[in-house]
Image 1: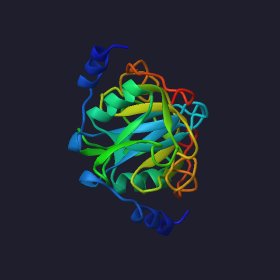
Image 2 (image 1 turned 90 degrees about the horizontal axis):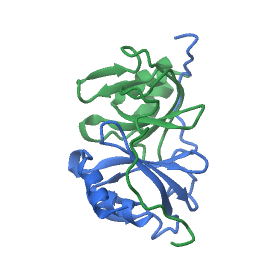
Image 3 (image 1 turned 30 degrees about the vertical axis):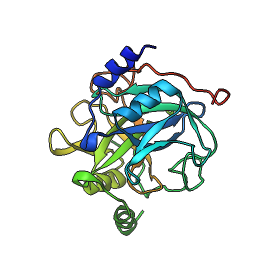
Image 4 (image 1 turned 45 degrees about the vertical axis):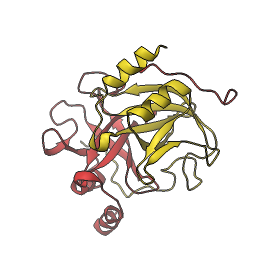
Length: 122
Length: 122
């Protein structure tokens, strides 16, 4: 993987408000969706080139390499952009809990009331 | 599921810029992450109460019930908020291709060059 290839890939991404784009994070082993966080171009660059996932923390206004404080590191397995180039899907090996509340994913136990749909009833 | 429970759940969500929040969509059967799109409170309400997934289309400026044009409907299996209440995870039964380009997911064949990380090498 060359630095040129990384920069070419980043140049094709379409960042949104505040030069950020959402990154969905999926456990590469279980397939569980762990969390969503935000990346700017530099966070994408660090994620693509170091093997560890780095975000931009909107609340703290700084780069945030996942696990540096908590120990709950995320190791990159793959990164893909979506069809519009404005969303990322990062597959990771997750050490410990992905959520700062201590749950494995940020969605555990936070289900909303929803009608279940089925193809049969349209 | 009561209308009151739905409204109470929506009232706890934290919508972001333009009163929208990202909704990650996962295939309930395969676990594949299919796409990310955006919802406002009314799109969430329709999604929770009808069994079909509805988004807000930022490009068209209108509600978009997935599949009404393409036939590629999404039937709701579950909806969860994340720990901050500002992101949704919707698990669906996906009919046909989730992506408007015709691929099953919006990420198929769109991998970026990335260094693979492993816990062993830190």
